[in-house]
Structures are given as structure tokens and as C-alpha cells.
Amino acid sequence: MLKRPAFISHPDCLKHEMGSHHPECPERLSAIHDHMLMKGLLDDFEQLEAPLASEEQLERVHSALHVREIFAATPSSGYVMLDPDTCLNPHTLSAALRAAGAAVLATDLVLQSQVPSAFCAIRPPGHHATRDQAMGFCFFNNVAVGIRHALDSHGLERVALVDFDVHHGNGSEDIFYSDERVLMCSTFELDLYPFCGESPRGPNMVNIGLNKRSGSTAFRQAVQQYWLPALHRFKPQLLFISAGFDAHREDDLGNLALTEHDYEWVTQQLRDVALQYCEGRIVSCLEGGYALSALARSVAAHCRVLAE
Image (cartoon, rainbow, N blue to C red; front, side, top):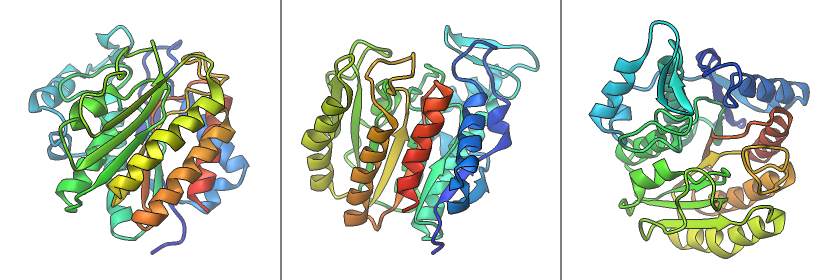
């Protein structure tokens, strides 16, 4: 096993863009890379390029019709709108396939003991993509593709997904709410897009909605009172993280007022669970986070714990 965790990305993920003023922009990945390079953190990681996910891997979580529609909708120039916030440009499909492929590669590397953990610096994000629909900046559900790869190709029986994005991961819930092999723990801001999650769809969903401006105390209490007991009961063999950093107090797309110290803290809590039950194996996939400086600092705090 290599001592260093994996940092997985691809230049194709920089080519997807949805307009000059869209918050889900290529500069997100550049800010992360530049900050981690400046802080010397990239030296702590094996830097790897993401492969393309296969249609078979995508169709473990999405309908064949959804996959075909995304392929068919890809334009040769300009944009194709899927909803008011989500559109394809000529490079979106390649970026989305790389993003899902990163989760697959990370899963293989971690479960084959080639790396202890992995962070996927990818875009477009994925946790709003349901089985049949692209939405909320998301086309394919990257973390779900990784989870199903762990279950179906590696034969795991218990996989946990933790989502601390400010927006509820409705797509992940849609895909896994009836799958007893998966435990999903989520925090999110109430009365915020996608305006659901308050009533869990299945017994394997631990959804904790938080009030606006509730800050560090409420977030940490939710993790300690709800997530950690559920994770200890479940005893996961592998832990996935939908790592959204838009609950940061500098981010205009949410209003929970977290800081990078909260992301460092929660990552440590999850790492302790992973060390206890699954040999420290964590696959983390970037979701939201749109204030570039706050995003870069938060990812660095997150990755610093993964590299301990």
C-alpha cells in the first residue's frame, strides 16, 4: 500500500462551463489546485488522472434512457439547457464521464490497498443527479457510481455515504433509499434547493436539516447526535463523502455559516470511524463550494486530515 492518498482529477473537468457568470465554474478546480500547491499539500498525495466512466458503470445507478439522453443532448457548439441552472457545452460529456470515472478509480485504488484514501477534485458535481434526471449542476451521480462499483464489482456488503453539502443530496437519496447495503447521512440547510430531505425516504437515510445561520454548534451537534451513532451501528466497510463546501460562511449559495475548521473537524470524525471499521478507507468526491478562496481553504483542511 502506498503511504500517500490519491488526488484524482483531469484537465477535461476544466473544459465544462455553463456561462461566464455561472457559479459552477472551471476556476473552482484551479483555485483548489493552486492553493494546495502553494501550501505544499499536493506533495502529500499521489496525483492521478481520472479515466472515463463506462456506460455500464453509469447504468448501475442511472436508467439507460437517462444515459442515452445526456449523450444525445451534447451539442457540437453552444449550450443545451436541461434546466434553468444546468446546461451542456461541447465538453460537458467528457468532463462528466471523467468525474464519474474518478470515483470508480478511487474505489479500485482504495479497495485494492494501493492508496489509503482518495480525494476526487472533479466537476461537474453529482449528488443532485437522480436515477432519471440531471439537475442542480449535476449530470451523473459520481459518488453513487463509485458506491455501486464498490458493491457490485468488489462485493462489499455495507457502504456509508456522508454528505455535508449545504444542499440535500436528493439524487443520492433517490438512488439508494431502498438499498439496505448503503447508509446515507446528510446535513443540509432547510428551505433551500432542492427543497426536500426533511422527511427521509427510507430507513437507511439519516437526513438532518439545519436552520439558516445555525453555524458550527448545530452542525457539530448533528454529526455527534445522529451521524456518528448511525455509522457505529452500521459498521461500514468503506466510507464515501459527498464533499460540498458551500455551507461556508463566505459562500453566497448557502447560509449555514460554517468555516474551514468545521470541515477539518468533521473529516477527522469520519476518519476515526473509517479507521475503526474499514481500515481508514475513504473516497471523497467534490460537490459544491462556490466562493473560490473559501472553497480552496476548506478543501485543503479536508485533505490535510485525509493525508494524516
